[in-house]
Image (cartoon, rainbow, N blue to C red; front, side, top):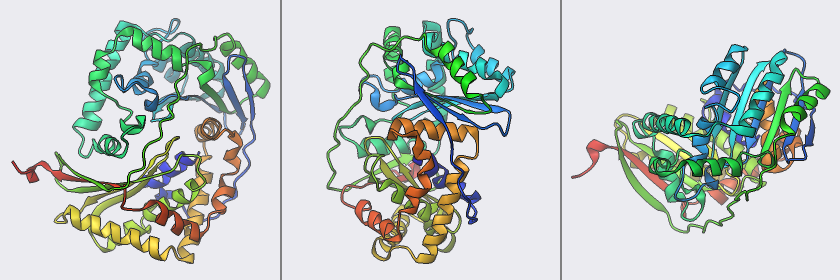
Length: 444
């Protein structure tokens, strides 16, 4: 759940965080594991007639071969292609025809699918998800179709998008050994070179019950939901192939890495990446609060000092990329008209040094605690949010009930902790700094 909270606050959604203190209602749930290894979490909330169904597969880009990157993201698309009993292209249409919505995402560590439907259609989507898990349609037609879809997505969102290559450029400089060194979108050359049998093998390895967590949240009856889960999922055989869990220890960088990327942009950008510990580390909570303090709303430190007062940047963001085996804390700014990258970097560094040396005032800390409390409550305000948080805590922290301990863990963080993690992790030794400059600035 911590990742979800950080994404909300750090991408600007802190704008709808008020300072009103809210009490978090305990989220009750039941969980069990089928003999085939499928973990199941059920949460009953009969306040509205909807249900959210999610399947989290513990496979992301880090599980890929160095010669076949992009497979996990490719399967995010491919598993909408159809199954043995659901016609090609019918999966999405069927969910929408019953008044539901659906989506999926892939990260370095996971692939996540979900549907939100009227609760009287719960059995339908459970059957459909079981179909994808039991016998998805992986054939030449589907693979070739989705190859073109992924290529177009990369062209639109990465290659031809201003600043679109930031993630892949940062990752490949921040990691030298770890499979985190490539972005989930992967390589189009690798996808083009892959044969059908390789896709089938990836599916049989990772899209198996013993690598999945099914979560159902909403207007359900526990006994009926459990019966349907067993009816549709118990027959699916346990995977027999080895699930590769990379455990490569990334060597600690001791020198700053700097580079310039020339892009089809008009305004320079500055990106800084600092090393983070593994996602389970206790400092994750303080780092989350630090990110909110830096850019979580109009009155946040960097937004106020660099965007509003200093007018050095059009926008800034502090994004902790929490990863299972150790992530990155990204600081990002787009320069204002007439401001060069060096001036913007210096302005960011001044504010970071102030936090390292002076910490945070008690008044700002109290305001920050209110923001975080509201963000935690908000993240559990929808059934999809509850399903996501239960699944994430179960898979990555080993305890779904952490969803009910989130505020307690944040409340343990002190103002001194925020200064301490700034001192610990925001060090210039080993950080990566990228300047994105207009192509017109490139010397021949």
